[in-house]
Amino acid sequence: MTSDVLPDGTVAGVALVEPVYDTSSGDRVGTRTVNPVTGAAYTPTGTLQACTPDGCTATTTALVLCDTAADGTVTHFVRTTTYDCESAAGRH
Image (tube, rainbow, N blue to C red; front, side):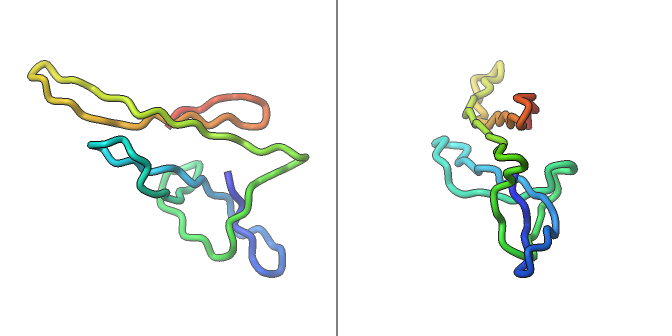
């Protein structure tokens, strides 16, 4: 999780920066920034900074997986898990 912080220190919003992977190679090719509640694209208005309430920082792990159809077609996808400060997990 990140905070969108304006120059005066005001928090304009909270966002999640997610890794983006190439579906063929599985290589990480970039990131996207989304609203952590809705999943909609989030455009920062300030500077993104790590959220650290009371010294805690949420973490995200990613795993590239593949789904093989009956006809042999392989589709790659990414499963991410974000752990909040209480170690609760949510999958995306």
